[in-house]
Image (tube, rainbow, N blue to C red; front, side, top):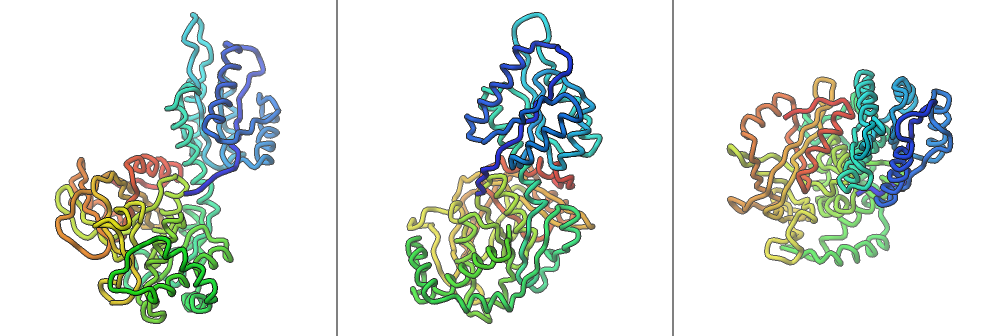
Length: 452
């Protein structure tokens, strides 16, 4: 999960001439500042009064100089709608438009804050500038939730546009549905694809010093994952994988990484890297297997949206209202049963090529999940997400499994729609149902087609 210490810039649109209830205006400005303090979000408000183009440019310069990575526009009294175009010209990222309520006493309209915000929203939409809307009293917890979600979406889009995605090797053999196009990625999402040599990565893995491996192994043992048909000597290679990935991401300033893990790594190194993958994803590293670059980007999106650890998986089979998800041994530990419990995760051999080390274990039942996917097709990126709940398994399978009930969807029809939209065979499950709305709003902010 990403932490953010950057302040939020608050641009308060004023008026050249007095009007409306200026006492209520001052109360709403003060309450807004208190709301951000309650949410423990640093807030920066420019010293200049914003009433025209000149003052807006000065205020935005102060906001940028303060290191703000998100912009909230507040109109506690109706201001000049033309200024919306100036803000859109000089702040390219999504803008949060925040409207405060009217004073609920007296005969006169106190602010027209929602009217002003509605005006700006209409202008932003027609200018094709992304924005998020928030409306509510600054004291209300629901308003705090709205602000937090809107800021997460705005920051996610901003960070994606400057992200650097590492691809070690290429897509796994035959998985051409997951092949990457660096120019579509750059044009549509703003992210940079950074191809890296698989051979050099293997050399890096093998050259990790023994002392570093021994130190890391203490962390592996502290996880207390049971070994099934393995011994402790089977684990150090995965520490080498883990340390090599950490090292590579730091050296290349990567925000996410995808690795071509088969068949080369199991054949040339002699071990699968999946224990290392499990550890890294559980530590908040956006990572994907099999060269699935878009899967890694989705993990990065989810990270910035505070959706937690995801389960990257195959769509194995389905019925009218259930889907069986399965993948080989990269258990997302926060979604699994507790370590040491009867269904808890354990370290073992890969089910197909009998080499260490994978982390097997089913996802917990009665777990609300968001099933999601980001992918490229027809020179464009697409996004989908829909809710489900894990149910007891219909049969026992090795690897990582989840049987998911999806009320409200006829799965064969949905599957047909997604396949005709070009969706690859990987999807990712995140805990909770709120991810559906966050992904949908992020797609809107990125101007991506929403499928489903």
